[in-house]
Each structure stands twice: as C-alpha cells, then as structure tokens.
Length: 159
Image 1 (cartoon, rainbow, N blue to C red):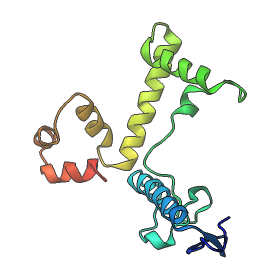
Image 2: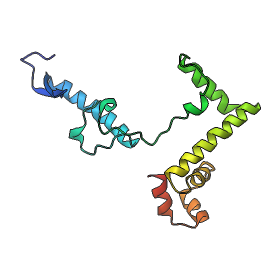
Image 3: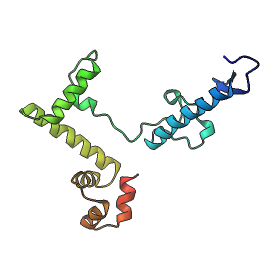
Image 4: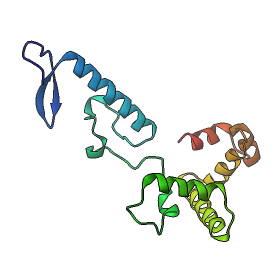
C-alpha cells in the first residue's frame, strides 16, 4: 500500500479504488498490456477496448477458447492425474519421436487424424492446407496447386 505522501494514482480492484504509486500503476499497465497482447494474438481475448481489460483473463467475461487446441486428451487417455508434468512431457516426446511398436504407430495415426479433422473444421480444406504447408510449400505454391487466389490462402491461414 502506498503512503499518503506518495499516492498519486488509483487502480480499480473489484470495483474498489486502491491507492498506488505512479510507478506501480505504470508497471501494472505494462504487465497487463503484455498479457493482453498475448491473449489477443492467440485469439483468447474478444475485448477490443483496452480500458475494459481487467488483467485477470481467468475471470474475464470476454475470455474465449482461442486458436490453440491441447492434444493431451489424445496422448494421455489412461494416465492418472497425479503424474508429474515432466514425466508426461517425456512420454509425449517419446511417443512423437520414436513410433517403434504398433501401439505408438496407431496413437500417432489417431493424433494426426484428430489434427486434420480439427483443421478441416476450422477452414474448408484445412487438412490439405496443413499438409501442404508442413511439406514446406509456400502459400503462393499452395494456391497454384489448389487453383485459387493466393490471398484466399493467406486469409485461411491467418484467420
């Protein structure tokens, strides 16, 4: 809490004014801006007005699912909840890096089919766009192969 001699600014927390120093307010706005920019980039924040942002994305009314999807449900179907996060990560890396037995091959196939299905649900011909871009083709080359305008591919990819 700021002393009365140093109070030069207020912030609002749960609709109550809290006195802070000017430096604290600037730092709070800087952290809030960084977090909000990240959430807007990931399309998790639907609020366009900066002044409406409270800085707490977990309790925000404008919070959305975003453009990133977790594949943990595909990879961790029969694992207990109390496993260490590092162990889960190592198992995921092991599954993705060395598909030696049949189970791992089937798991990889299921994972990629889920990714392609999700890509198709987001964008028309999303799986094809994803496969071609993963093979290193540019948007211009993909547009030529599909017989559409390059701007259309750009809009689909950067949607």
